[in-house]
Image 1 (tube, helix red, strand yellow):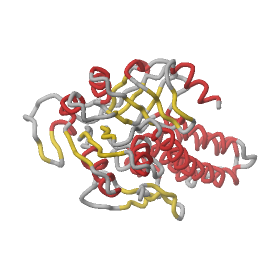
Image 2 (spheres, helix red, strand yellow; image 1 turned 180 degrees about the horizontal axis):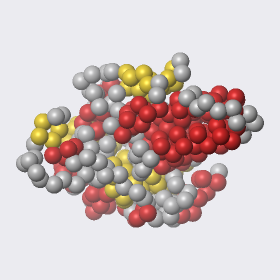
Image 3 (spheres, helix red, strand yellow; image 1 turned 90 degrees about the horizontal axis):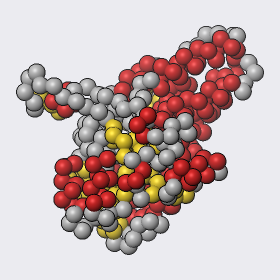
Length: 344
């Protein structure tokens, strides 16, 4: 069964702390939006759709602290809270998208007294809609999967990364329910080995046959003829179909094309950025070098060595076979197909 990793409960946000998985399943009850920002930055909650839900709930938490009877002043303070939350992780566009929706809902209210309830309603609606979108997306994506397929996936795109079903893992779930999936290869994935710790764990919970590989093994397995397709998620998709996703996705896409393996991106339309045309304009988050020079508090690199740690890379649209959304499957030319999806 899909895991419930985030929920609004009794005026606070309940999170499954993903930094402790798979060894411990610990839930955090967060009542201060600044604590939620810390949880976002530290990857206690992560995944573009889940970050959108978290941002919406974070604004709801912040709105509870606003003391203003004047409507305009109330909205101004809520907007400042929203801006602070969105800045926590700049690459995942779902956070800004969710914040805009919540602010728009607040702006429709005529008095300061009703704004808080409107924000909470909109945040819950965002979570409910994401769950339905992912389930629908999974059904569309399953049509692309042949019987007896072994697929390769990168990072974590399941219940932990969404409102509860998954994007790329949602496609795998739907295809597996139809008896199409023979097995899954999951890469370890930096940062914080999210494929090894989270995806392998989620697939085990589902009873799915999963094999863990290091990121650098992908070329070997893609050239072996065992992989029917690659399925990944996305943190931002431009209007031309360039995709920002977890670091290592670009390498996978190039290797997949070299070996004539279809490369599919699965994401809700909330991950499409209507303001960006090209991938080169996507901001890329740079994380602490300590995530590369060691792991789990144990240093593995020499003291004083420099380390680069971009959390994402950008895959040009020419390497992408299709983009799977809740509104259907977009194919080339993406500039036209994605525009139609956003307008639908």
